[in-house]
Image (cartoon, rainbow, N blue to C red; front, side, top):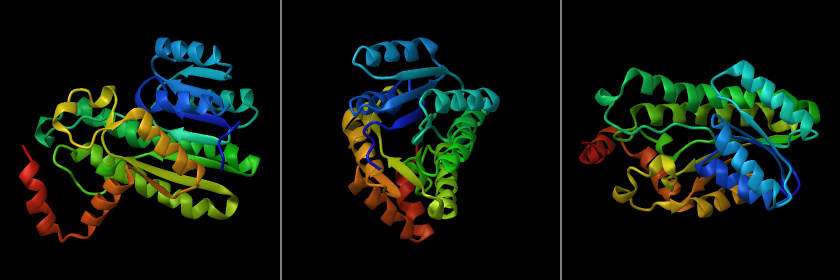
Length: 253
């Protein structure tokens, strides 16, 4: 699906990958519905993109609040004359040893990364089915492929999202609904600002989003960002558990 002129909904659109997706898709004359908790940031981005001629609707909503999220998605569907593509992008990443995680941090990651993404996609799905076509995109992570030091909850939520997206891909392939799983590595965003100096292979957000958009337009089932790092990490899934544990534990603090 070429995205030029399409109606696109993006959650987590006030910063990072979501914000850059909005900017790059606005250049493709997409009609945009941008969702995030920060009303001020959304309105600032809306003003910026509208000044460049884009049609932009914004909704200050938390993806964990299902009723409010449903109202926002239905409103966007109506105002944009039907949704074509939905990006479940909102996410929370807290990387630290499991025993140092606070209960509220655990709950927030599960609620946003897993439940919030599912809410977004399942609310939008009937609208796409009614239209007869569309594309659902879930922003997962390379960290979903195996348990990583510091990622007990983050990796788990993204692995669960992968399974959910794969099931949707199987169930709705014959109903003209494409489902794309995006697995980024570390991207230079506010979420990674505190760890940027200690992480190799950090991608600039504009380059990462360009890769994501290209993969979505090609209708790929899975988009690795970057592809080589995804492929390398994916190969590690075939290592025996004992061997993987020994190697990965060397990086555990």
